[in-house]
Image (cartoon, rainbow, N blue to C red; front, side, top):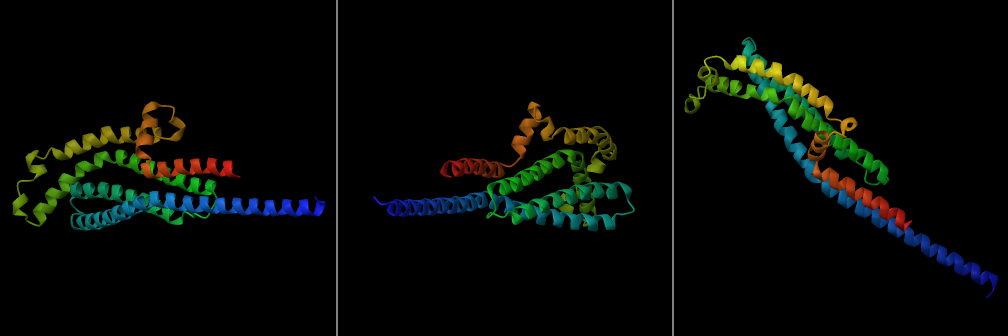
Length: 230
């Protein structure tokens, strides 16, 4: 066989190999987009719904605060709930923005970085919910006042202030004094630097979002497959 013929065969085989690799990479990219997008789409819709709910709650609480601004106990209850809803709304909007800006055409490492950032915000969302648990005592107070303001006779018996002989404010204050420092301690403890602690690891795993976890695991498997093909 002539040397020129050998070279021609070599170049032909090399071209076929390159085409095969290109097709494989295109298939991986397509699979990557479909799988990750299918995992993030439900989370995106969930956060949009939550953002609408939080925005509505903020609007209603703002109206309540305006009407009861000079009645300190009611105003204080509205303020703490406003702080909760504004904080969670901002976090939800950050997650929506991250999901919207994920570029599936980028390399696996870039997408993984975006998903890790999203996962961090999801964990922060759960931490904030725990931190704000004491504020939930404000709900009965506000509901009671709304019932009075709108004269809702069907719910007239629901008066937490009257039923507690006015001690509900004291209960709220005690709960805040006790639980807020604990909540702050919990918020600071739950971080990846403390992941060696079993309870921290469990909280992070349970609150980090199953869909994002599945997407990250899939990308890791895809990264391994890509290296094997190439």
